[in-house]
Each structure stands twice: as C-alpha cells, then as structure tokens.
Image (cartoon, rainbow, N blue to C red; front, side, top):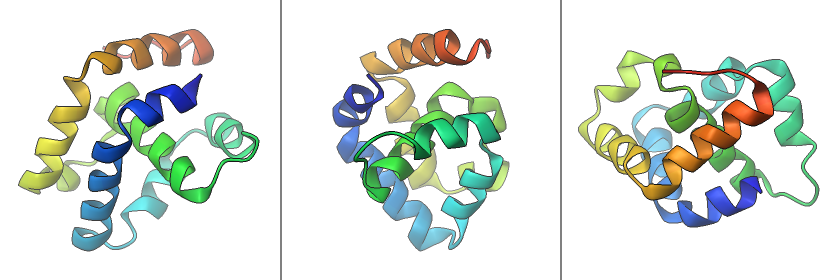
Length: 109
C-alpha cells in the first residue's frame, strides 16, 4: 500500500531528496534518526525495496504524516519549502495521513 503513495509522488520526493542532499549534507541520516524505531523497522522490513524507495518513504513519513517534526532549518530553504508544500497539497497527502493514522494509531494535527 505504501508503495502506491511513493509512486504517486515519486518525482517530487526525488526532487526533495536531491535538494536536501545538496543543501544539507547528512539530512537524510538525521531524518532516519528522527523516525520512531518501530516505524523505521517497518520500513526496513518491506520486501524487495531499494534504498531509494526507502528514503522516499522516510520523506513521506516526515514531511506529510508528521509535519510538526520537521526541523525548522530544513524549511528555511525556499526550494525545500516549495516541495513540501507541493507534497502536502497533492490529493494523495490526505490519504497517506489517514493510512499513517490507521497503521500507527497516532493522530497529528
């Protein structure tokens, strides 16, 4: 199921990952550290998923499902902020938030 959300937003997530890598080296490692351990394991244990897709799932997890956990310094970059805005205003964002709430039991407002 989570693959569908990644596929729908694949290009935007890729642009976001590239921008984070170029503007903030080490940002992906910090994003992974900030994902709760149980959620991180559920992403790692997905069958036959490449590292690129796992990074995009992590970006969806942070920037769409848990926006209140986004570090402020990441949103200081206008391109990153625009891409996050684009992710959150796509029709699939509300469906992913609902999926996230159902699978984790956590509600973020």
